[in-house]
Image (tube, rainbow, N blue to C red):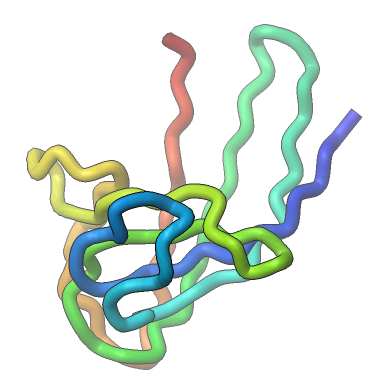
Amino acid sequence: MANVLPLTFEVRTGPPPADHQALDMGIMLGKAELPLTGSNDGPDSHRHVTITARIVAGGTAGHFRLKGIDDRCVDQGTIGRFGDGADLVLDRVELQADEDIRITPRFSRR
């Protein structure tokens, strides 16, 4: 059975706040509404989602936040380039206003 969890994905400048309960930091560069659907069909099930975020302000992406329907942050992490050790890797972190960025997370079993 699928679970639907509506989330908002935000791309922001600067480092993330100290924890996900802290107030937003940095400038929001863009966001995407995510009605994520996940299935729990056994150990070989995979969840893939492509996020398309509309960039509304130019700047350097530094972190992301995932927010629930009540606008409370449920997760956050750093954004960087490959090799930076960031939680989310983008091809480029310098973003321009009025562009779309596509992010396809890859989930692996550990």
